[in-house]
Length: 29
Image (cartoon, rainbow, N blue to C red; front, top):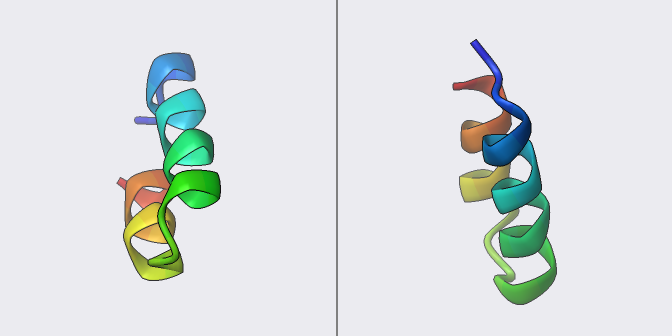
């Protein structure tokens, strides 16, 4: 299930990291 904290973390990673695949995985997970 998606957690608010996880979503925020993923969003931050997206801006900080250029690995979009990693962020997508976080969102799906």
